[in-house]
Length: 322
Image (cartoon, rainbow, N blue to C red; front, side):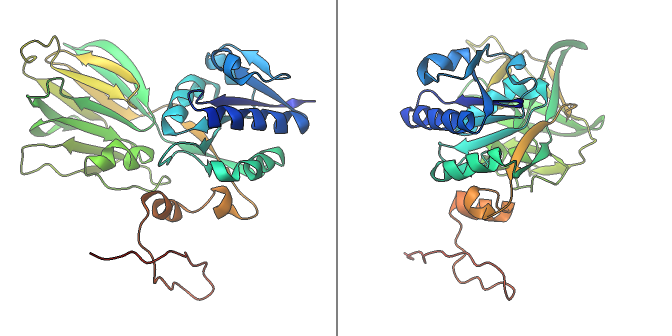
């Protein structure tokens, strides 16, 4: 066993295929002399002899080389919440649907583990956002997000009234379903569904995207990463509701918003680290250019593309037209 190499393996235990895959991953890593950790909340399902069982806290990843995450984007966001303080890169293997945060697909799992064993990967930083909620100048909550912080209405039959601000100056007042403040990583998630642009991960920017706003000026905005974005909640709660709005960060961390709440969003002080595969057939292993990821994840039609001479062509069956 190599005492200098340790990998934390986490999994979506609600899927039998994920549990089976996790056992295979643990076996391959142990056979290569790499120490493996699993968290106590998953150990009962995994039943992996030889793996160290640790508490599911931020300390679970401390000192590890990598965290291997088997599941969809939701699983990776859950694990990022736990492991971000340790500053350890995450490598996601997609067992879900779209899986934009995942680096590789389930079908190539043995090849992925070979890359990990031979250290054929690099590490990139993904911007996060730090979120502060104030009420009458007093901080009532602090949290963060990798994808987005969204201010949303709580009553289905009623819009939320907000006024937005950039760098201390008022921008616009909206009656809307909500406002999404996203990172480039989150541009393909909730922000995209709300009509925001896709932003390449290496671009440093913040996004502000209104959701179903009743206003002439209500397009998505791409803003400097050094800017401070703010959303102030106007008006009171709807009948039968205790709060005027709700803040969701990555769809996981919730803060109820009273009338008059001010939500401030700025570039996060602590990024999330993601492992990127390299070497060999990167496209097959998942380490493809972001453009190829968009094509694959969204099933975009690219049949007929010729490209520059010698370029790798993307094969795609032509689609039937109505």
